[in-house]
Length: 228
Image (cartoon, rainbow, N blue to C red; front, top):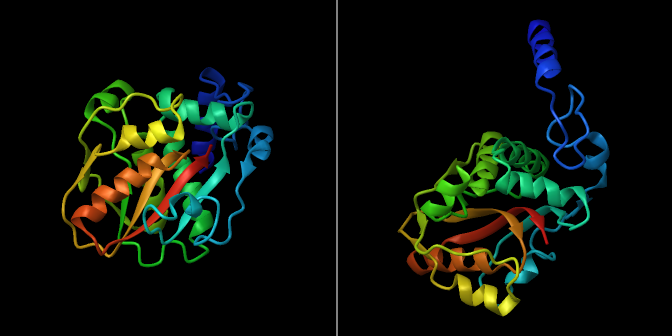
């Protein structure tokens, strides 16, 4: 272990690690974000997974068993740089690390009880080719590593390429996501949908509808890293 620590310290001298938010150099014990930026994140502190701000987004649309997001997205805070680095910074390890972080916190509760598969929101193959990876799948990998729940990234595929939704209204987002996913049949009783950011819920709603169309008796839970 000492040899490994010395080696990592030596590597850090030549290839220093920097905080993705403030660009300050990270200490040997820090990853992705420095301690100062980590402390400024607006954590959700959700304890009731059945009735909270995330779950209510889907009321009247799809039945959701549990919902959780880890922190709030802020345009003028480290959370923005963190999510931008995850999506566009060619840093897939960010997703794996934060997936583990969320799962480590939630596994202390009953959030993962009876969940049989993790379904990351699929990217269109062209989008995945552009980025080199699916950030939602990276989050799912971290969650799976902690919980032991398997990832199923073949059940659902993205049927159409979707342009950025960042400047669309709530109605436009919903219309833009209609019919974008296709699902196969599965014997799961309960699945967990994973995405990076929850905004209006249009993407996850469309994904859930596609799954329920082929698997009407499956239960749906939702987990995202952030909520805008």
